[in-house]
Amino acid sequence: AQSVTQLDSQVPVFEEAPVELRCNYSSSVSVYLFWYVQYPNQGLQLLLKYLSGSTLVKGINGFEAEFNKSQTSFHLRKPSVHISDTAEYFCAVRRAGTYKYIFGTGTRLKVLA
Amino acid sequence: ETGVTQTPRHLVMGMTNKKSLKCEQHLGHNAMYWYKQSAKKPLELMFVYSLEERVENNSVPSRFSPECPNSSHLFLHLHTLQPEDSALYLCASSAQLAGDTGELFFGEGSRLTVL
Image 1 (cartoon, rainbow over the protein chains, first blue to last red):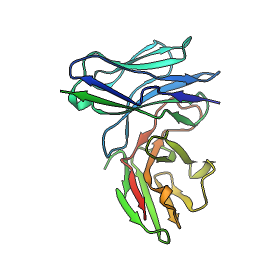
Image 2: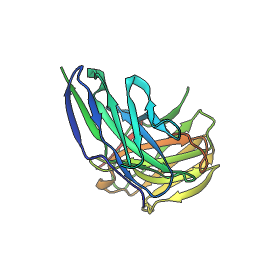
Image 3: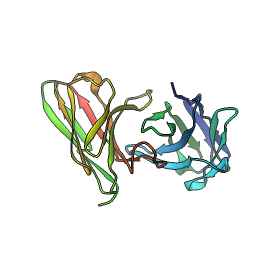
Protein backbone atom coordinates (compact mmCIF):
# COMPACT_ATOMS: atom_id res chain seq x y z
CA ALA A 1 0.00 0.00 0.00
CA GLN A 2 1.10 3.53 -0.61
CA SER A 3 1.88 5.92 2.21
CA VAL A 4 3.30 9.39 2.61
CA THR A 5 5.37 10.50 5.58
CA GLN A 6 6.00 14.07 6.55
CA LEU A 7 8.21 13.71 9.59
CA ASP A 8 8.14 17.35 10.65
CA SER A 9 4.80 18.50 11.97
CA GLN A 10 6.07 22.04 12.54
CA VAL A 11 9.03 23.95 11.13
CA PRO A 12 9.87 27.42 12.49
CA VAL A 13 12.29 29.47 10.42
CA PHE A 14 13.36 33.08 10.34
CA GLU A 15 12.44 35.31 7.45
CA GLU A 16 14.90 35.21 4.52
CA ALA A 17 16.39 31.92 5.75
CA PRO A 18 16.25 28.78 3.59
CA VAL A 19 13.83 25.98 4.41
CA GLU A 20 13.40 22.33 3.53
CA LEU A 21 10.20 20.40 4.21
CA ARG A 22 10.66 16.67 4.04
CA CYS A 23 8.45 14.13 2.35
CA ASN A 24 9.03 10.40 1.96
CA TYR A 25 6.70 8.01 0.25
CA SER A 26 6.40 4.28 -0.12
CA SER A 27 5.29 2.74 -3.35
CA SER A 28 6.60 -0.05 -5.49
CA VAL A 29 5.15 1.34 -8.71
CA SER A 30 5.31 4.58 -10.66
CA VAL A 31 3.83 7.53 -8.85
CA TYR A 32 3.10 11.15 -9.42
CA LEU A 33 4.13 13.49 -6.62
CA PHE A 34 2.60 16.77 -5.50
CA TRP A 35 3.09 19.53 -2.97
CA TYR A 36 0.10 21.58 -1.87
CA VAL A 37 -0.12 24.62 0.39
CA GLN A 38 -3.04 25.53 2.63
CA TYR A 39 -3.40 29.02 4.06
CA PRO A 40 -5.69 29.53 7.08
CA ASN A 41 -9.38 29.04 6.31
CA GLN A 42 -8.70 28.09 2.71
CA GLY A 43 -8.54 24.98 0.59
CA LEU A 44 -5.39 23.40 -0.77
CA GLN A 45 -3.51 25.01 -3.65
CA LEU A 46 -0.99 23.25 -5.85
CA LEU A 47 2.61 24.39 -5.43
CA LEU A 48 4.26 21.96 -7.83
CA LYS A 49 4.13 18.45 -9.20
CA TYR A 50 6.47 15.78 -10.47
CA LEU A 51 5.20 13.59 -13.27
CA SER A 52 8.34 12.49 -15.12
CA GLY A 53 11.53 13.88 -16.61
CA SER A 54 13.81 16.25 -14.74
CA THR A 55 13.98 15.40 -11.06
CA LEU A 56 14.13 19.06 -10.05
CA VAL A 57 10.74 20.66 -10.25
CA LYS A 58 10.06 24.36 -9.88
CA GLY A 59 6.75 25.65 -8.61
CA ILE A 60 5.01 28.84 -7.66
CA ASN A 61 6.19 31.36 -5.07
CA GLY A 62 9.84 30.37 -5.48
CA PHE A 63 9.45 26.81 -4.22
CA GLU A 64 11.16 23.81 -5.78
CA ALA A 65 11.32 20.11 -5.01
CA GLU A 66 13.62 17.29 -5.94
CA PHE A 67 12.45 13.79 -6.72
CA ASN A 68 14.85 11.14 -5.47
CA LYS A 69 13.74 7.70 -6.55
CA SER A 70 16.41 5.76 -4.67
CA GLN A 71 15.50 7.47 -1.41
CA THR A 72 11.79 7.66 -2.24
CA SER A 73 11.79 11.30 -1.26
CA PHE A 74 10.32 14.50 -2.62
CA HIS A 75 11.56 17.28 -0.36
CA LEU A 76 10.34 20.83 -0.80
CA ARG A 77 12.78 23.74 -0.62
CA LYS A 78 12.85 27.49 -0.77
CA PRO A 79 16.11 29.46 -0.59
CA SER A 80 14.63 32.48 1.19
CA VAL A 81 11.25 32.45 2.92
CA HIS A 82 8.85 35.31 3.54
CA ILE A 83 6.35 35.91 6.31
CA SER A 84 3.62 35.21 3.74
CA ASP A 85 4.89 31.63 3.34
CA THR A 86 3.49 30.80 6.78
CA ALA A 87 1.00 28.02 6.02
CA GLU A 88 0.53 24.27 6.11
CA TYR A 89 2.21 22.21 3.42
CA PHE A 90 1.02 18.82 2.25
CA CYS A 91 2.86 16.23 0.22
CA ALA A 92 0.74 13.84 -1.84
CA VAL A 93 1.29 10.89 -4.14
CA ARG A 94 -0.87 9.29 -6.75
CA ARG A 95 -0.10 5.95 -8.31
CA ALA A 96 -0.02 6.09 -12.09
CA GLY A 97 -3.26 4.77 -13.54
CA THR A 98 -5.35 5.39 -10.41
CA TYR A 99 -7.36 8.25 -9.04
CA LYS A 100 -6.41 7.89 -5.38
CA TYR A 101 -4.32 10.71 -3.99
CA ILE A 102 -2.64 9.85 -0.69
CA PHE A 103 -1.77 12.83 1.50
CA GLY A 104 0.73 13.24 4.30
CA THR A 105 -0.24 14.71 7.65
CA GLY A 106 1.14 18.12 6.72
CA THR A 107 3.96 20.36 7.92
CA ARG A 108 3.15 23.69 9.48
CA LEU A 109 5.73 26.25 8.34
CA LYS A 110 5.97 29.28 10.60
CA VAL A 111 8.12 32.12 9.35
CA LEU A 112 9.38 34.39 12.09
CA ALA A 113 10.26 38.06 11.71
CA GLU B 1 -16.99 32.43 -11.10
CA THR B 2 -13.98 30.24 -11.61
CA GLY B 3 -12.50 27.20 -9.91
CA VAL B 4 -14.27 25.15 -7.27
CA THR B 5 -16.89 26.78 -5.08
CA GLN B 6 -18.22 25.32 -1.85
CA THR B 7 -21.24 26.45 0.15
CA PRO B 8 -21.82 27.08 2.94
CA ARG B 9 -18.38 28.00 4.21
CA HIS B 10 -19.47 27.43 7.81
CA LEU B 11 -22.22 25.22 9.18
CA VAL B 12 -23.29 24.49 12.73
CA MET B 13 -25.80 21.73 13.22
CA GLY B 14 -27.30 19.61 15.93
CA MET B 15 -27.07 15.86 15.89
CA THR B 16 -30.65 15.45 14.71
CA ASN B 17 -30.51 18.00 11.89
CA LYS B 18 -30.38 17.32 8.17
CA LYS B 19 -28.22 19.59 6.08
CA SER B 20 -26.31 19.51 2.81
CA LEU B 21 -22.97 20.76 1.57
CA LYS B 22 -22.73 21.90 -2.01
CA CYS B 23 -19.80 21.96 -4.40
CA GLU B 24 -19.68 23.40 -7.89
CA GLN B 25 -16.77 23.34 -10.30
CA HIS B 26 -16.37 25.64 -13.29
CA LEU B 27 -13.29 23.95 -14.74
CA GLY B 28 -14.88 21.50 -17.14
CA HIS B 29 -13.60 18.58 -15.08
CA ASN B 30 -15.37 15.25 -14.98
CA ALA B 31 -14.19 13.86 -11.65
CA MET B 32 -15.16 15.20 -8.25
CA TYR B 33 -14.10 14.29 -4.74
CA TRP B 34 -15.08 14.78 -1.10
CA TYR B 35 -12.31 14.86 1.48
CA LYS B 36 -12.54 15.22 5.25
CA GLN B 37 -9.83 17.21 7.01
CA SER B 38 -9.54 16.80 10.77
CA ALA B 39 -6.84 18.26 12.98
CA LYS B 40 -3.59 16.28 13.06
CA LYS B 41 -4.85 13.67 10.59
CA PRO B 42 -4.12 13.17 6.91
CA LEU B 43 -6.83 14.19 4.49
CA GLU B 44 -9.35 11.37 4.31
CA LEU B 45 -10.84 10.53 0.95
CA MET B 46 -14.57 9.99 1.35
CA PHE B 47 -16.09 9.73 -2.12
CA VAL B 48 -15.04 9.99 -5.74
CA TYR B 49 -17.33 10.49 -8.71
CA SER B 50 -16.38 10.13 -12.34
CA LEU B 51 -18.89 11.25 -14.94
CA GLU B 52 -21.56 11.30 -12.23
CA GLU B 53 -20.90 7.70 -11.27
CA ARG B 54 -19.54 6.90 -7.83
CA VAL B 55 -16.25 5.07 -8.17
CA GLU B 56 -15.05 5.18 -4.58
CA ASN B 57 -16.78 4.97 -1.24
CA ASN B 58 -14.10 4.81 1.38
CA SER B 59 -15.95 3.05 4.21
CA VAL B 60 -17.82 6.22 5.06
CA PRO B 61 -20.72 5.97 7.55
CA SER B 62 -24.15 6.07 5.99
CA ARG B 63 -24.98 9.31 7.79
CA PHE B 64 -22.98 10.90 4.94
CA SER B 65 -24.74 10.58 1.60
CA PRO B 66 -23.20 11.97 -1.59
CA GLU B 67 -25.04 13.03 -4.71
CA CYS B 68 -23.62 13.99 -8.08
CA PRO B 69 -26.43 15.13 -10.41
CA ASN B 70 -24.02 16.24 -13.16
CA SER B 71 -20.30 16.64 -13.70
CA SER B 72 -20.29 20.20 -12.33
CA HIS B 73 -22.12 19.65 -9.06
CA LEU B 74 -21.51 17.52 -6.01
CA PHE B 75 -23.48 17.40 -2.78
CA LEU B 76 -22.86 15.85 0.60
CA HIS B 77 -26.07 15.23 2.52
CA LEU B 78 -25.65 15.08 6.28
CA HIS B 79 -28.03 13.36 8.69
CA THR B 80 -27.80 12.50 12.40
CA LEU B 81 -24.15 13.38 12.62
CA GLN B 82 -21.92 12.92 15.64
CA PRO B 83 -19.66 15.52 17.28
CA GLU B 84 -16.62 13.65 15.93
CA ASP B 85 -17.83 14.49 12.44
CA SER B 86 -16.89 18.12 13.06
CA ALA B 87 -14.19 18.90 10.50
CA LEU B 88 -13.37 20.82 7.34
CA TYR B 89 -14.96 19.15 4.33
CA LEU B 90 -13.11 19.79 1.12
CA CYS B 91 -14.41 19.31 -2.38
CA ALA B 92 -12.00 18.83 -5.26
CA SER B 93 -12.13 18.15 -8.97
CA SER B 94 -9.76 16.83 -11.59
CA ALA B 95 -9.78 16.53 -15.34
CA GLN B 96 -9.95 12.75 -15.48
CA LEU B 97 -9.44 9.73 -13.37
CA ALA B 98 -6.96 7.01 -14.24
CA GLY B 99 -4.50 8.02 -16.87
CA ASP B 100 -4.56 11.71 -16.12
CA THR B 101 -1.36 13.30 -14.89
CA GLY B 102 -3.07 16.37 -13.53
CA GLU B 103 -3.71 17.55 -10.05
CA LEU B 104 -6.68 18.11 -7.80
CA PHE B 105 -8.28 21.52 -7.66
CA PHE B 106 -9.77 22.24 -4.25
CA GLY B 107 -12.54 24.45 -3.00
CA GLU B 108 -12.09 26.52 0.13
CA GLY B 109 -13.94 24.00 2.26
CA SER B 110 -17.02 23.90 4.45
CA ARG B 111 -16.27 24.06 8.17
CA LEU B 112 -18.78 21.82 9.93
CA THR B 113 -19.44 21.89 13.65
CA VAL B 114 -21.76 19.30 15.14
CA LEU B 115 -23.13 20.15 18.57
